[in-house]
Image 1 (tube, rainbow, N blue to C red):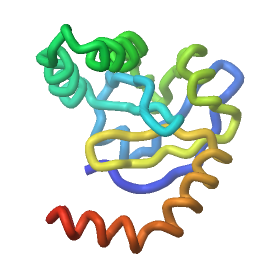
Image 2: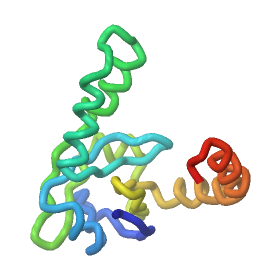
Image 3: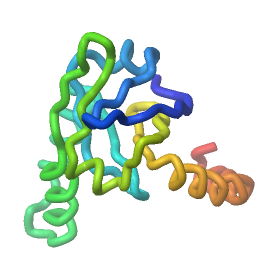
Length: 144
């Protein structure tokens, strides 16, 4: 399971070192794709296969489905993890998530999210204020 929060830097060549714990669980090849809420998502190859198959099974007749598939699948990139645990974040994804030198990697069970450090801090403050009401809502639908 991918969990935890880690602050790292992206170097001037767009290389980002993955936390050791994430490297051990994710393998030597991963997929980086646009995420939601302004971040990027990283998936293992197996997890990505499952997600892309589900997206591919959705109806091409729905404009919303086509748009979301273009967003997720069109923006996805297979990335190698080098021998010292770094990945190369393509410019178009780095720009899309407004990633600067400092980024935060968040383990969210089956994926890793890459956030601009300032955006993550702001987002986290908002969610922390809502945590009680979010938990109550999730409890009402049987998730918690």
